[in-house]
Length: 139
Image 1 (cartoon, rainbow, N blue to C red):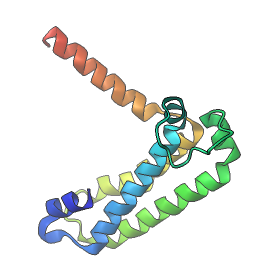
Image 2: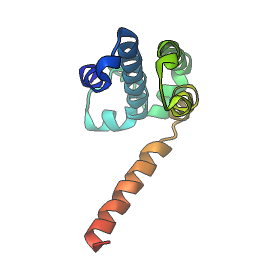
Image 3: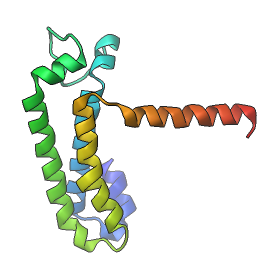
Image 4: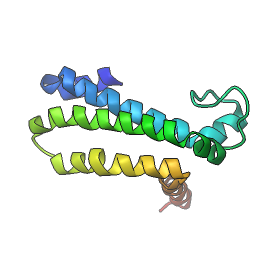
C-alpha cells in the first residue's frame, strides 16, 4: 500500500509521508482488529488480539483489556499525528480535511470501537445495500 501511495504522491513522496501512510495503516488495522473480535472468533479467522483461550465476547475482552487496548490505540494515534504534523506544512490543499481526519475523526472512531459501536460499518453496509437495491430497481 505504501508503494502505491508513494507512486500517487509522485515528486512529493518522502520518508515522512511514508511514515504517515504506515501509521495510518497501523491505526486502521488495530481498530479493525478490535472491531472484528466477535466475528473473527465465530468464523475462526485470524485476529492478532484474540487470545488462545478464555474469549467470551468482544465486550468482555474490551473491558478486561481496556487499559492495554487504549494505550496501544493512543500510542499509535499519537505517532500518526506526529508524523502527519511533519508533512502538514507541505500540503497545498486539503489541510482542513486532513486535520479533521487525523485529529478528530480517527480518535473519535477509536473511541467508538472501544465502546463497541460499529456505526461506521453499519452506515457503509446500508449505503451499499441501498445502492444494490437501486441498481436492481433500475434507478
